[in-house]
Image (cartoon, rainbow, N blue to C red; front, side, top):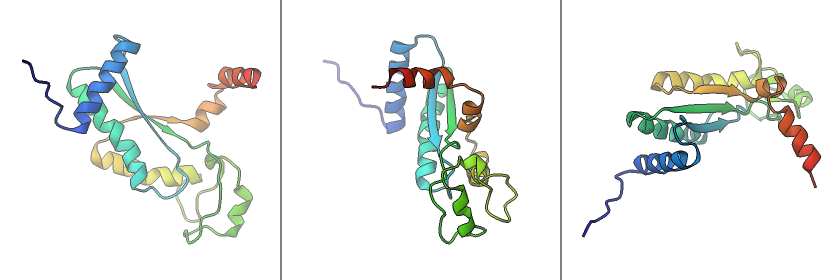
Length: 161
């Protein structure tokens, strides 16, 4: 009788599942592992988890000799929802930016970055460089401005109930 042995860790199990699903859906195509982060405030452990989980799975898939890419989608077109309290370089005057895309909101006073989004992306990018995490970055602001989603948005508007 043959006994089935479970993979040793969650990364191995997830990689097995992703590979099986990818072979069923898109045989022969490179596998894409994706994550998305909104640079709306200071980076926290949840942001890192969103990044590290697909990174580890993509690394395991690549280790097996299978083409795989990790894409990080910066949700920098998200709107600025509220002015944070107790954040250096920010005061009530930032209320005028509520509702604007994070890339259109100025960085906190004293920041070397041009926008709110860039200011809060920077620490995570530094951590990624320090830990060897490599991704293909996609800015949603750039995608929207380039019209990448135009046809899908028009279709959704035509088909809405």
